[in-house]
Image 1 (cartoon, each protein chain N blue to C red):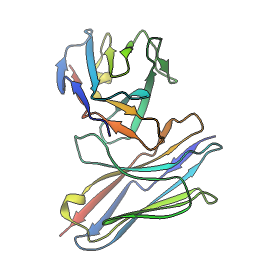
Image 2 (cartoon, rainbow over the protein chains, first blue to last red):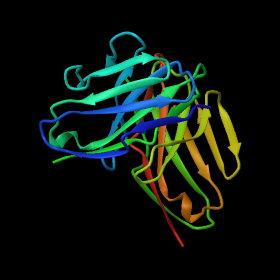
Image 3 (cartoon, chains in turn cyan, purple):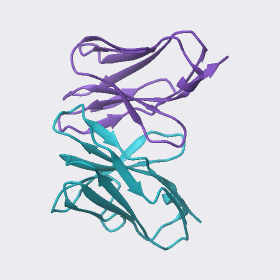
Image 4 (spheres, chains in turn yellow, blue):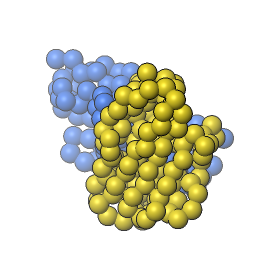
Length: 114
Length: 109
């Protein structure tokens, strides 16, 4: 199994600023994903982080707002740009192994935008 | 199209048994997952079913019927610590997880 860590665990940011969230996996994973979870709701996939190339974004999410990097197989970052209060959410990083059932989640980053 | 549905909230008594149902529709299927999520924490993996039938793991069991697009999570001998949200998700043909909205389970003494 893989252990995923995220930094920061939480932050309070001002409107108009940007925050970069880091995700580190303790072993190589095939795919890495970024999710958003609004309070009391389920997970919404933002994008798939691709190693060495541009991330694949889901409908409703764009690179200018959520730039993602994945320089290697164990590390990825998500930036939430030009934040507004609507971006207040928990952001989760996940990784998957070679088998479909190998899905791992980081502890999440709780973001509050004031 | 793709669709997944589970009850919003359920209540059960400590020591009892509860079954949380999940129905889904998809053209491509690579397995059904159940996750547990305590408030303010990340989801933790409970089970994965890709073939029909019942998978038992301690107090938790998960069932899948692919022909009916149906799964359930069975929790036995409920404990107060089982109070959490239970998320159902299926993996589609692109190996992407499609998530249900989650079932909030409330355990009463």
